[in-house]
Image (tube, rainbow, N blue to C red):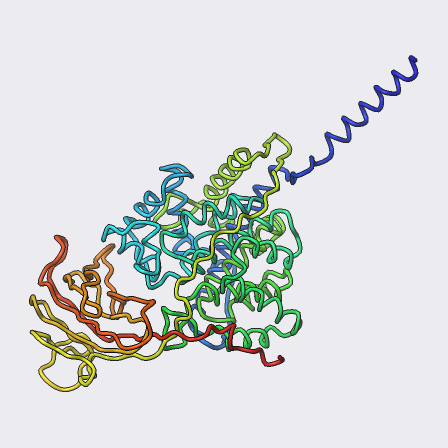
Length: 538
C-alpha cells in the first residue's frame, strides 16, 4: 500500500509538472517580451513601409510603377510627418481619453477637431460631424460617397496590434471605429488588415495568415472576392507577380466610385489586393515585399506600410534587418506630429491595451507567460455600399444643351470670373438662382467646391426636396475643389431630374453664400465585375 501511495504522489507531481509546461486547451501562449517585440515590429513596419513607398504614391495609376525606388533607413524619420501614423494615433489618443469602449461619436469628435487636413472618407466624416451627421451615418454611403475608400484600412493597424489572436475583438472595435468614415468594403479593409496582424502573432505562414484574416469579413463581399482572386492568381502564376497584377487590374481596376472615370483608384479592395500580392510574392523577405507592394501602384505608400507591418508582427522587431531597426531606433523617441505619441510610447501603450484585452477576453497575463484564449472571428453582416454601380459619364456645366440655368450665375474659368467664352464652373450666391439637369441613370453626384465662403443649397430630386447641401468647409484651414457636394444612388433605371436652388443662406462660420458647380457624374447599374469577367486563362 505504501508503494502505491508513493507511486500515486509521483504521478501527481509529474502531471503537475507537465501542466505547468503545457498550454491549456483552447489557449495560445506567448511570452510578454515576445508580445511587446511583435507589437514593436508592427509599428516599425508601418514607419518603414510608408517611407519606402512615399515617393511613389499615386505616381502609377492603372499601371505598374517602373521607375527607380531610392530608399535608405534614414528616410524612416519621414514617418513622423505621415498621416498613416498620426491619424490612427488620434484614435489611440481617443481611447486614452474616453476609454476603449467609448461611443464612436467620441472618437469622431476628437478626429474631426484634430488640427490637420483630411481627404476622401476621412474628410467626409469630418464634414459630416460639423453638419451633425454622426457615426455610423457619417460613413454611410447615403452621406459619404467615399464609403469604400482606403481610409480606415490604413488606420486600423493599432486595432490588430492590440488584439493578438483575438480576431473577434478586433472586428468589434473595427466595426465601431470604421463606420466613422467608411462602410461595407471600406470597413472590411480595416477588419482584414487588423485580422492579418491578429493572426501574425501566432502564425508564421503568410498564406495561412491571409486565410485567417479572410475569416474576419463576409465571404460574399467584393473585398473577400478580390483577396481570393489574388490567392488563385498566386497559385496560377507563382513566380510572376506582374501577371497576377494585370489580371487584378483588368478585373477590378475600374470599379472605384470615388475615382469614377479615370485611372485614379483609392478603393480599399484594390489597394488591399496589392497588399496581398506583396505579402504572397514577397515570401517573407522585407525588401522584396516592400518593392512589389509599392510597384503595384495607386496608394503605394499606404500599401507597403500595411504589408511591412504584417511582417513586423510576424518576425518581431528584434528579427527585422539591422539597418531597418537602426532607422527606427534613431527616431524612436521623436513625437509623431499632431499626437502625443512617439514610437516607444505607442509600443508601450499598445502592449498595455493588448494585455488588458487579453484578460478581459478570458486570457491570463503572468510575469513570464501570457495565455490568450483562442477566438474565432464573428462574421459581420454583409454591407454593400454601391450595389452594381458603375460610372457612365460626366456632364460639365458648360454643356448648355443639358443644363437649364436661371438666376444670377457667374461663369468661371480656372477660378477666375469671365464675361464670355469657355467656362468650367458656375458660381451663384443669390437666393433663387437655380440649375436643373435631366439625366438617365441610377445615380448622380453634383461636384463643386467646399470653401470658406460656401453657402447652402436645396436639392430637389424628381420634383421632391431631397436635402440641403452646406458647401462651407474651412476646417484646419483646408478647402476642397471639384468635390461631391451632393449625391444619390439606388434610383430606378430611367430618366430623373435634379434641381439645385441657391438659398442665399450660410452657417455662422462662413464668409459667404456661394454655391459652385463644376459638373454632374452619372452612374448606371450594371453586372458586377466578378459576374462578367473571366481571367485570361479561363
